[in-house]
Image (tube, rainbow, N blue to C red; front, side, top):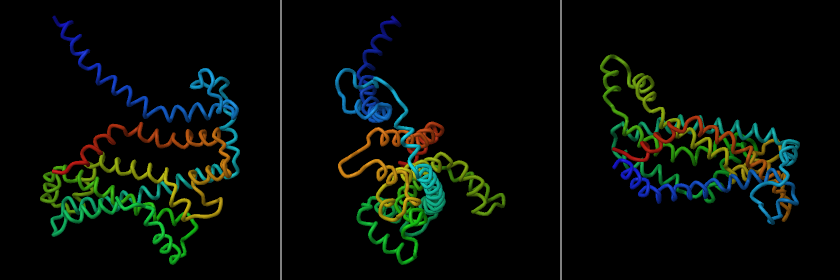
Length: 283
């Protein structure tokens, strides 16, 4: 009887697992394609005869070509530095703004939260021209500080909206008890609320780091010189020319560049999932 019940349950679950498997394959296939392309010689990349989904003669030559690029490691360091600074700026400001919208009772708090999220929806294509003018007036156009100041303009609105939703779901009683015991509001926030909100803060940090790491438009528009390039525009300029694309080194660069972000998600998967689900709802 129990075996029959298990069999029926398995049959009912079969469509779900089939759909889940199909979704996983669709999402992971581009990464697999990039990996196998990075292991192929140029002639083999364009050869679709036989089993082209498996490299016939795997080679690390494309990775050697990538690492021998004159400024590759400079671009990697620039990307890491800008992403880290941008993440720190975005998270600190978003925590303060999100807490204020969620917890401080002032007229227009709900409207402020809505306007913040609408700001995130504004296309970056419309913003980089006025931002470039501001950077030029401040004398920052062309260097890495230009990216450290402009990246947060797109990240802070979303992180603020996310954290405001998360703070709304964090119980207020522990914070109020700490204030009754003599702690200041700031002390209660730092010692009680922020540790309880760590999954949401980590989620905002991961989102900010990922978006900064992969950003292309602003890195093309706001910096100049090989020493100031990021991975995105640096690799593209090094391995493309006119209608010619060196797909092997480009896919090797994409594979290597995805590792830091993949490790970040791997180490913080549980906190990221709990943070994104709790922060997407209010009340």
